[in-house]
Amino acid sequence: MSRQRVINDGFWRSNRMAGRTVEDRYALFYFLTSPFSNIVGAYEIVISIAASEMGWDSESQMLPVMKRLVDAGYIAYDPESQFVWIRDWWEHNSPKMAVSSKLQQKTFEQIAQLPESWRDAYIIDLIDRLPTQDPLRTTVATEFGYPMDRVSIGYPYPTDRSLPNTTINTRANSISTPTNKVVHSLYLPSALSSTEQADVCRLLAGVPLSDAQMLLDELAGTLMRTGVIKTSPIRYLAGLVKHHKTGDFTPAAGVVISAQRKQRQLKSSQDKDEPPVPSTDAGAHLAAIKASIQNRSSKASTTSV
Image (cartoon, rainbow, N blue to C red; front, side):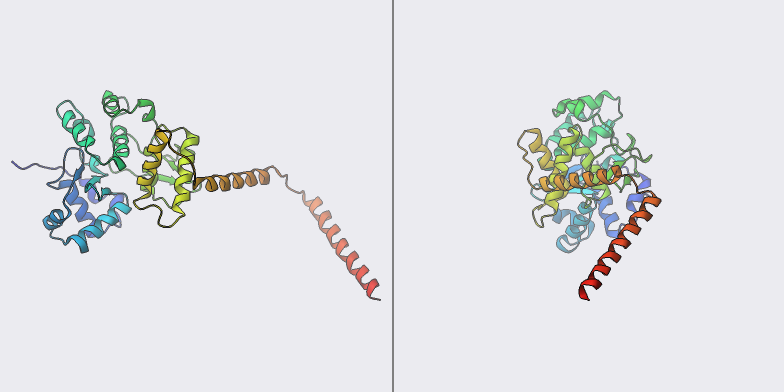
């Protein structure tokens, strides 16, 4: 007997779908209903078979569209293991049901098979999508060795995140809720998309603020070096976070970024502290400058005579 998949009909009117091509929508629809799919929405695929099922060519159609979806944050793809993560999976499926007693063992087995490069981000995302006071959050965190004080923090989305709309405070590049409440006072690399900024928030869950900024500075500095990051900014940051957790992280490219920001902050502080010049004083100052210029001109004329 074949399986059935449920698609939230808001998919077609979602703000996230606005501007996506027909091919993008078709591919996402396929990934949400693929015969390769599993409980957790992150599974191994065979590109040639997937392309054939869609009536596409692997090289000229399937892979270019997948790259667009990865760049836009709709999916994550690990070429080495050929695992794909459908980032909007839980907007069409119930995370609570996936970790309920009936499916829990199978769900945990499937999560354990995910590529290490984004397994941490996946688990944090799953925990965040469960209701705040639900004991299943602790169950998932405990299963994969995540102390709850590392994941029970505010995120840029509400708990029920069906087809969310995230507001970004572009002035400080800090992630905000739809009510514009700042969740993290962090300076994020300007090159990150809004989806990537949300992913950053999940990856840095529970990391002390100063350490989180240090990791972001390292990412920003590395992004400025062409060709250093071979995968994606989020996967690179996930690697930095992993090294930080094991105590193996040493700042390098981020040192300059941090120093430049501190210089800008210092200059801004000094500018604010300097009192404005009263208009009368300004006038007197201007008159003194004019007198000085006239003096120099007069002396120059006398010398030439």
